[in-house]
Amino acid sequence: MFSEGEDGLDAATARELRDVVREAVVVAAVPNLSDYFPALAAADLLGVRRRIEKLVGWMYGLIDRPIERRRHPRAAGELRKGDLLDVALDMEGGDVDGDDEGWVMNQETLRGMFMDLLVTGSGSTTSTVEWAMAELLLNPRCMHKVREELRGVLGTRTHVAESNIDRLTYLQAVVKETLRLHPTVPIGLNKAEATVEIQGYRIPKGTTVYVNIWDICRRAKTWADDDPEKFMPERFVGCGDDKEEDRMIGFLGTNFELIPFGAGRRICLGMPLAERMLHLMLASLLHRFDWAPLPGQDGNGINMEEQFGLVLSMATPLRAVAKQVL
Ligand code: HEM
Image (tube, rainbow, N blue to C red; front, side, top):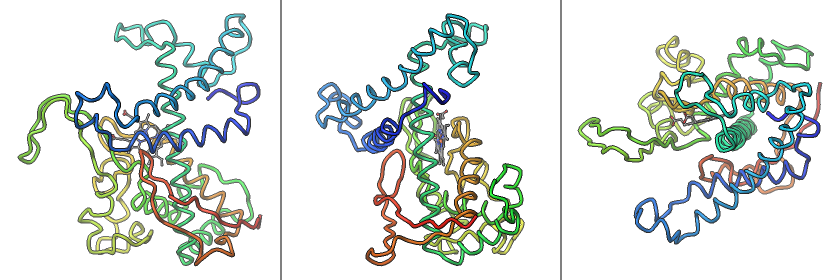
């Protein structure tokens, strides 16, 4: 986004960013009295707004610094870096499309956009990889199968390319099954733009509508007879009665039983990026390393308890031992 080098994050700031994002996604999802009694909002009785303001202030500082640093070389006509920041700054101060639609980039919209990318983009993807690794460590049969597939497709090559993903059908099933059991954005939040009636329920204009993605992905009729609590990537590679239909279920928002990225107009903006990153990260980790739970802990040391927040992460971060094989 901001390019490497002078604008890149040093290790300490990157760690702090990780902690701030982790806290923000939890604080933003805690039940707040003001949501139920808007008249009390100004009092901020639970201190949620104060905590969020502090975290947001830190994030804004992080975002403002590279923006400011970039303005001067740009004004002096220095060579562009051609990254997202350059593109966003190109749009600053004017009507982006020139069509009077009001699409203007300014300091606030720049902050909002980079904040979205940093907060929604990083935590959800890394948490999904973490859940997938945990499930595979707990299910050695699946771990073996996915690694065999990788060996067959990649051989001794260490680099996984985007073009390899199409042939990694079991890996794709692992990603789908992980997103089904552990949708890292568990609740979709939308606001009704107009008063509507859905299946006999009247939803007044302005109502905040919570879509329980977590529940849908576990309870939809599709999985009901097939041990929905079990990690079973095979359900996506044609093990049901109608094999073709099983295979077709995807998370692009058209199969409402599997909507980890939401659906409709407000479907996740980062889905194409997340989809690629998830397959590439997992493929690289699984192909190049042997994995084992950390020894010396109780049981296998893997605790699947969830930490609820805007992002659903593991309550106890996964710790595993990697041995490089390629
Ligand atoms: C595994 C990874 C991810 C998951 C599971 C996920 C899931 C979601 C979900 C469920 C929504 C709400 C959709 C709705 O209300 O119907 C959402 C919205 C959004 N996501 Fe993601 N996301 C992921 C990765 C990313 C990445 C990598 C980015 C950006 C680089 C991103 C950017 C966004 C944005 C900007 C929105 C708001 C879209 C809007 O309101 O129009 N997400 N995401």
